[in-house]
Image (tube, rainbow, N blue to C red; front, side, top):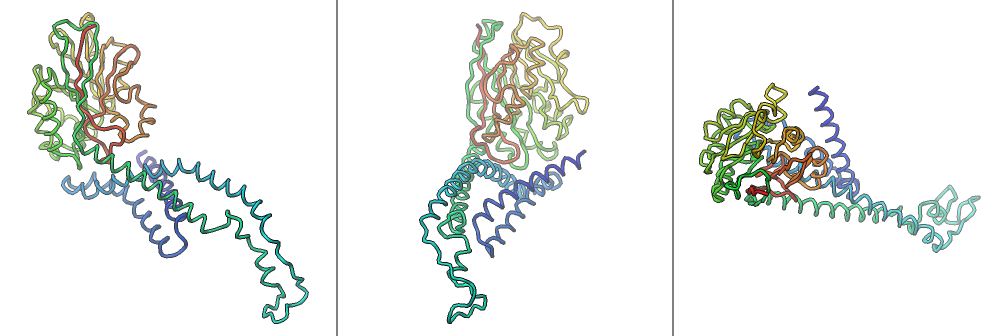
Length: 421
C-alpha cells in the first residue's frame, strides 16, 4: 500500500514539474544552452522534494534543516507557480484566440505573391528546380500571421512566466515572513448559556499546532510561552500537534512548556502528529512538564466540565477518542468545554451535548487557496462556527507543517473569553 502511495505521489510530482518546465522553460527559451540549463534545473528541483521527504526522516535531527529549508521552500514556490500559471491559462488562451481572429484580416491586407511558372529556371538562377525565391517564400507561413511568429510566442511565454514568477515569489516571501514571525494574539468572546455567573470572563489561552521539528525549536516554544503568560489566563489549552519528532530529538525544545502559568493549570490533548512521533513517550513527557494530558477524560473547573479526547488518528493504534468515557455520566446542567484536535470531531461532540469545542489542526489552510481544500474535510477551517448545535472555535495554530510559509493564514494564539447568556 505504501509503495502504491509513493508511486502516485511521484507521478503527480512528475506531472507538475513537466507542466512547470513547459511553461517556464520551453515557452520562454529557444532551443539551445538556456533551455538545456532550465531543463536540468527543473529535474533537480523535482528530485529535491522526494529527497527532502526521505531525508528529514532518516537524517539526524541536527542535519535535517540542510534539506528541509530548500526542499520545503521549493514545495511552497512550486504550489504557487502551479496555481498562478493555471489561472493564467485563461488570458493565454484569450490572447491566442485574439491573434487568430486577426490573422484573416492580416492575410487579406498582405500583397499577393507573384507566381512564376516552374517550366524552366529563371535566367541567371542557380536553382535547378526552376522555383523562384518569391514562389518559395510564398509557400511558407506569412510573417503577417502572428500565430506563426516565434518572436511573439516567446514574448507571450516570457510575459506570463514573469507574471507567475513575481506573484509566486511575492506570496512565498510574505508567507515566510508571517510563518516565522510572532503569532497574532486574538481575543474571542464566546457565550455559554449554562456558564455560572461566577465564571463570567473566564479566559482560556488556546494554542495548537506548535509543530516543533527541523525548522522550529526551543526559541519558538519560549516565544509562545511568553505570549500566553502575558494574558494572565485562567486556563491554558494546548490542542495537539506539538511535535514532529521523538522526545530524544525535541524534548529540549518542548521544555519551556513547564513555565506556562494559569490559575487552573495547563492541559493538552494529542494531535495526529503525536501518533507519528511516539505518542506514549510524548504523553509522559508533557505530563512531566506540568501540563496535564487529558486522555478521554474530564476535570471539574469551578462548575465547568473541561473534557479532552484523543485524536482520531489514535484509533489506528488502539488509542482513539472515546467520547462516552470523556463525557458520559456528567451533570448536563453544567457547561462542558471539549478539547479535541480536529474540528471534524465536533459531530461526535454534538451528539454528547458539548457546549463548546476548541480545536486546531487546519492551520487555517496555511497557504491560500489551500484553505478551500481543507474546507472540504473540516466543518470549520478557522474561527468560530456551529456544528450540529455545538459551538466550535478553531485556532489557526502557532506553527507550520512542511513549508515555512503561511500566506493568508497567519499563526495565532487565541484567548477565548467565556461569558454567560
